[in-house]
Amino acid sequence: MPENHQKEKKVLLSAEHLYKEFPVEESRTKDVVHAVTDINLEIREGETLALVGESGCGKSTLGKTLIRLYDSDGGKITFDGVDITKMPERAFAKYRTQMQIIFQDPYASLNPRMNVFQIISEPLRTHHKYSKEELAEKVYQLMDEVGIAREFANRYPHQFSGGQRQRIGIARALALNPRLIVCDEPVSALDVSIQSQVLNLLKDLQEQYGLTYLFISHDLSVVKFISDRVCVMFLGMICEIGDTEEIYAKPLHPYTRFLLNAIPLADPKLRSEKKELLQGDIPSPVHPPTGCRFHTRCPYAKDICASEVPPCRQVGDRIVYCHFPLEEDA
Image (cartoon, rainbow, N blue to C red; front, side, top):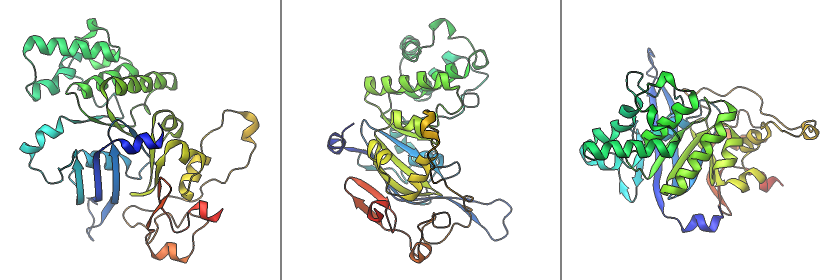
């Protein structure tokens, strides 16, 4: 989607200086895992913003904190212009219906004791939407839209394949007509042949309902297909945010370039090209490095990288947190 179109869209959800930490069990020194640190982020209405990074970088934690499945430990979350950060649960209930999540594992996220009809209708019953007759019609309509035959309404999750289970999860997320859906690695547990079907379904539903997606993934090929903008995370902090095509064509943060270099190439002729790959292990989120958290693995790091947190730099329409962005090196 062209960047100028993106700019015209209003911000649906934003985070300012967001923090989330988890206490380390059995820690005598009361250590904490710094899962999300000083995050500033905007999600625009109708777009797909992808959140990418290595496993354990805080992507899922950030997604769940933004929609208040986790309470934040600092900062501010604004939804449609309203501060929802510490809003009492009773007042927040109407906003909760507008924010839903599709979980990573369709085997674990569906109640095995509930049939398809009960699973999809549960949010509608919880929030007292529709009469009994209207409820049935709504559930069948959702089943039609995600490609689950109506005659399967009384079947249980174990009777479906992984792709079908994820479709049921998508129908449940759609039930309350949300405006924002957090897609937490929704295709990573599925066979590659099924992934494209689910991704196309998500795209079609977005167009039909005007949905906004926060799409969490570590698969950069999937991200390139589905996202309008990309936010790259490393160890709980943002490295770079920008238009998908621009980031893939010309990454500004060294970590982004290493991630892109790791994408497998389909063309055998290109595989022989030597690419610089990331070395070393991810530092501990309990005791993260000072300054730039990536500096212990970055071949371009200088002394300032170890002592000072990188400032937020605006490079065209991109945001990058780096003392020495790659464009400047060039």
